[in-house]
Length: 96
Image (cartoon, rainbow, N blue to C red; front, side, top):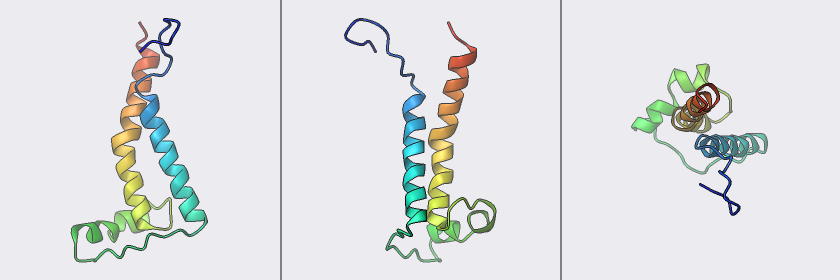
């Protein structure tokens, strides 16, 4: 990607997933702070209900009050944050 003057863009491929992760976390912090809860009742008998009510998301990994926010945060860590950190490490340590 080049800018209008022909210089290469400074935005690396790992920046956008990192920004997406941070925006999602700011949204979850606002939801947690102002008690904005989703109006969805998840049946405990479903797969998602079992995941939400598992010990992992109710006792061990609990950055937020709502278990659904904890599950989504764990998913975003795996899908956005880890690849962004790996890309940043490659960019820093393996410069050309």
